[in-house]
Length: 323
Image (cartoon, rainbow, N blue to C red; front, side, top):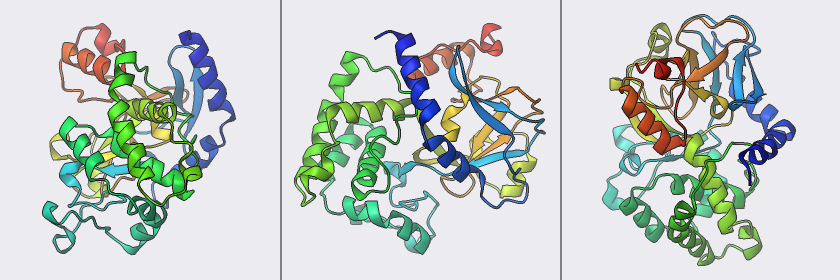
């Protein structure tokens, strides 16, 4: 299949998907005093990088552009017993559980209610083999796929909800490597009382397709220190103050392209709800870009990291100047 055909098919899905308006609305209607209404951005398709986000008016330095709730999120193994199992908010000391107890907790009744449907599905299965395999192999994306599958079975989302996101290109070797984790996931569901028709979507093709999308669209959630107001008044959040607590996939933030000298920044203050703010003045019609990696790395390290993790070599102005 040619890259042009893959792009055309994906572009067609982008144009007709109802999720664009649904998640765009959900991401931008939170009641924040400084939140523009409507948000000053539009999503469009370009010939050179696919989907892109553009400013519809001038955006000032430090302005909160929009917020976004995750489609799916999951704590990292190291944070599993220290953060909310739904929103990834840090738990108070009286709610944290030692790893020996193998329990999870929610930070509020709201998060408990929001997760009730898919968590009831998850609790039907014994995930010890699947989780241990992922832990030993250092895998994080299969945990997101597991939660997403539980959401699909519970009826919270449809199995094709992520089709709008651009997938990574998986080599035949990479596809063969996911066989074990896929079989563990499928067999874990098969050992429950969940009816077969509820998991009919769970084929290897579906699993690899979702994994390919999560591979390049999932964000590492790093909770930043300081108050919300302090972060907005700062030109950039301190990388040193951030602590990774898990991973999440979003709709609108996934449409932002990369730049090693970005004009926008994604940050997390208290939980997995993402906030996008401007790092400098952005003019009308200008594309908004974020940095997918640690921008402080040198040119060679950035290129290697981007190619290995995202499958492309960066040609932004900073990289072209070998900075």
